[in-house]
Image (cartoon, rainbow, N blue to C red):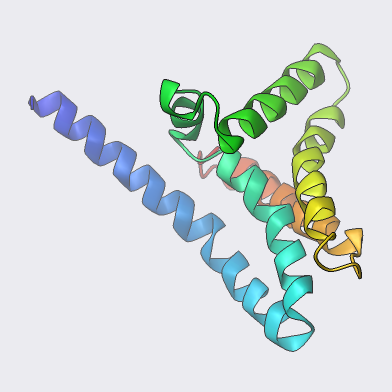
Length: 147
């Protein structure tokens, strides 16, 4: 492995560490408070609303999900659907379409999970999504360069 490849790998690793530290740790603490303070399913729906858009923007996820290994997998197909939504959202000039496109897949996931728990409230999925949108805004304002 050449010196440039080692530096690139180290830089990618540092970016992932910062990405997880700033984006995942505070939300996991909030999730624990919601899960144990209110209800486990509330915490689960909140986490679904946050984690899918977060995972979608993880450095290296797009390459992995679109690789040949994941071509026919559930994850690969959900990624393709999300990618399609983002392409449609980028075709319009409206700013609100991209955040709404980020909400679609978590909303579908939580609707499927609601089959198990019929007391589904979309509020918690929307709240998790709103927290992720807050993370996106903080990323831009504080110049973390994580997304």
